Image (tube, rainbow, N blue to C red):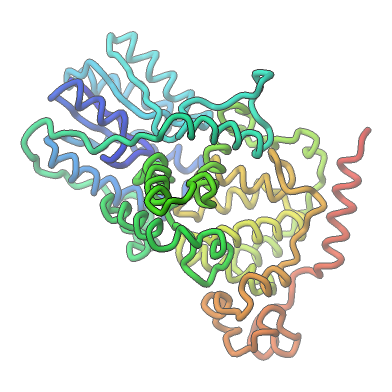
Amino acid sequence: MNLVWFRNDLRLDDNPALYKACQQSDSVKAVFIATPAQWSSHHDAPVKLALMHAALQNLAGNLAQLGITFDLLEAETFDDCPQLLEVFCNHHGITRVWFNREYPLNEIKRDQQVIHLLQKSGIETFSQTSDLIVPEPLSNQQGEYYKVFTPWYKAWMKQVSSSPVRVLSSPKAVGPALKVKPIPIFGDQSAYRRDLWPADEEKAQQMLMDFIQKRSDHYDEHRDIPSINGTSTASPYLATGILSVRRCLFEIQQHCDLKGADWRENAWARELGWREFYRNLIIGFPKLSRGEPFKAETQAIVWEYDQSQINAWKNGLTGYPIIDAAMRQLQRTGWMHNRLRMLSASFFNKLMLHDWHIGETYFMENLIDGDFASNNGGWQWSASTGCDASPWFRIFNPTRQSEKFDPEGTFIRKMVPELSSLDNRHIHDPTPDQRERLAYPLPVLDYKSARERVLDRFKTCLKPG
């Protein structure tokens, strides 16, 4: 009998482990292992766990229609998984276990331990590539992992262009339909916005197709404007594996082909490349999974620590409207617009001059699409500690950014309603009188002096010798 071990791949569509397990045998079972202590140590957001729970319930129903029984196993940490799986396999007569690979360091160690113990028990294991478009991380002509995105992207694009992306259909049924077992509840169900991200796999695919067919052609011009629905909002589905990244690229390729356009010029396809680049980094540089900066010399940076500033940032009370709007969006929806992630992270790292680890953790604790590789890559980019990061002297002016990307204050008015009565000029930077009248805080810092401080700090800490 075959067993499919689900992890961050909660779908039927384009699921190599599930597809091949069903091809190999008509006797298939499925499991998922809940590891609450591990999730806590990884700072997985309660709202993400709630989405995961809903996705598991949907998956269990879909598997039941295929005649596949689904069991939720419970452990505390990854260390408990090998023995738990061994006992389950022996009890149910499992001879082959199929799963899709994951790439952070703890997940790699877990899988190695599982493979070792199961093989000792005479149980075969088969790991599949599911979360990468190019199956193996790319290396340059010197045999080293890439450290800069542009040359990596050219190499990646060459590989993808020479070998068409293929996606697997949902597997065939292996038996008659079964009754569905309820999944024990975990995660913060009250914070999970089902209206924004239904956990139904079919609905997730429809949302993807709606974006590709209706909005992807204008993605490059709309992606930075938080007041409009210009991005894919597929990230929660990619983070939990409700959607396959290969499905995403395949559909954008098909869309461009139908329009006679070159998919390689598509801006959203490039974003899928960034996602894969960050995965290549955590494979090639395990230190990233240990919390180390990519650029070792940046360990010398002396960060500030002001809990009142940190609290103001978390609660959307910095006195900078665009930053506060971004942080309140995170609180209300569990998600944040991509441009605003960059601005709020830059504000935290470069103006407040706080350690990026604190912000990285806070995002993971609150994002419904929390993904270690992308979140770490984004925060290290903003802090100028990462691979191919923003130059240390590049410091965003939040007011200018607000005026550029939310010129009429539409997004600010939605998320910071106490400012909604202000005109299009003052909504980006209210006067002291307006702030007092509207009960909106004064800025937690002065941009000009904060900018001078961070430039001086980086120069001092990063100078040779």
